[in-house]
Image 1 (spheres, protein in one colour):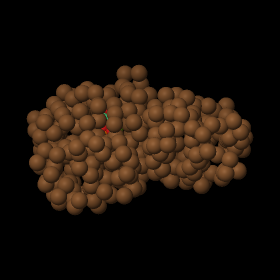
Image 2: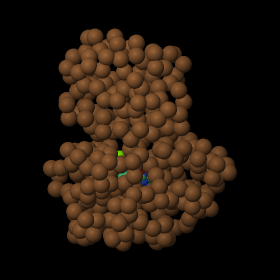
Image 3: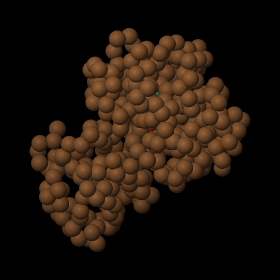
Length: 334
Ligand code: TXA
Ligand code: MG
């Protein structure tokens, strides 16, 4: 399907799965309340969890929001188009269906040629959560999106693999004088603070979470996921031991070199090197989706102890996906 055809179908009330640079999205025309409600039905998403608006061009923001604070101007200039979602005070044009009744609305401009063509042809905002069933791993390929949502009566725009593989960073600029981090992503706190010239408030570890979606069990495969964190030797020792008494229903996601690869029933190398955690990030969800396809009952994911700019974001996703089932082999990880 072409992006023009997808845009036409969207205007007819259809839902469209489309690629972005982060993960695939499940889009509805934001001005069509019935279509937006259908997004919640299709995903099985709780109605209190608001959707992000996607636009082709920052100029489209003007009618969606009450004001654009200076902080948001700076962030848009530095990071749009790109994997940064910004929360504003919403205008009356944006329905309660999109924002789950909140007075704020989150908006982003994806940096992906097909997403851009699609959104440009739509000509107005597209409300889209990640294209997965609620609680399940996000999808980073057309095939994975189709496996989760193929029987839901939605249409698909095939954009191959997404580049980043982790959902956008979400920041809240809707309150005066303060910028808050609601969800970590590939745009890091350091990136944000250097553009703003001031500290931002990290709300992601608060008990009182301000971003409703962050409360839920998320990104989780069906099998029990264990994350082991350590250096290469520590991880290898564990894997050697586990590979001895593994069953066929086990799956292993590895970073770095692995000894005796032939001994593992199901093995996937997420990244060849601890330095390349971007590769790990881009393959994480396809690994978790693959685990569901092969019906893995036990999943072991190894994670380097060494700090990397993406470590905190990856850990945020892994904590939710494993429900905190994380072992520090060196004892230094917290
Ligand atoms: O990279 C992404 O952001 C992907 C692609 C498709 O753009 N989208 C995505 O959407 O991850 P979703 O719905 O899976 O996650 C959006 C997050 C949720 O945690 C939601 O609670 C939060 O953003 N959110 C949306 N609107 C909000 C609002 N007005 N205030 C606070 N949090 C909001
Ligand atoms: Mg999601």
